[in-house]
Image 1: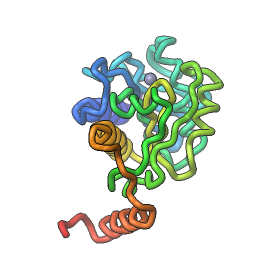
Image 2 (image 1 turned 45 degrees about the vertical axis):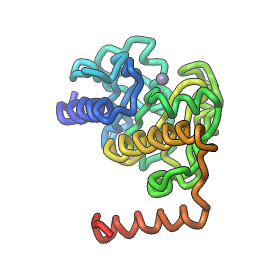
Image 3 (image 1 turned 120 degrees about the horizontal axis):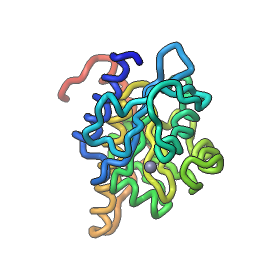
Image 4 (image 1 turned 60 degrees about the vertical axis):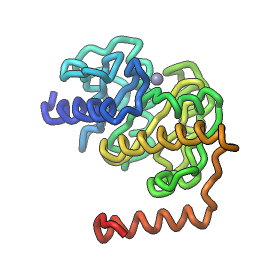
Length: 222
Ligand SMILES: [Zn+2]
């Protein structure tokens, strides 16, 4: 296996854990696309906490295990990672967690709306949709995810399960996983105060414009 890619996956798992958008048991998986190949590196351990290089496997996008040990229970969710890489050539990283607040929305089968500006800035101006439930790793689950994902939208809630994020880089996927969790937590807290309020559509567009302007000129305080 390519040591550099293994290190990148291990580092990404550590950053997901450090960021806190993960359930107490650390369940989840991270994968990175192998540039120029129909392959990915994937975390095969039951938890992202304390994950080391021996917890990484190399898997073909056709589902063939190419290197490493992949227990069937971890192998079950490989299919949804593969599907994101197959459907979206721009995706370089797929991240799946059971981050608690976002998973509360997934369990309630309720989408997350654009309640905080960061969602609009990172491609989720229309919120995070819900993919309907299907048994873990089943063809039905993958079909539901494909149906739930919207073009250009980098995250989807998996009904009665958790969250799936996919983006060009691990940095962006991890950042968006954190933003989705933050929005879900704020919304649940806001329930005690009359419920969360969605940002008006035109202002969501303005937030995105500002984000793109920052991208162009570099981050600065304004
Ligand atoms: Zn899961």
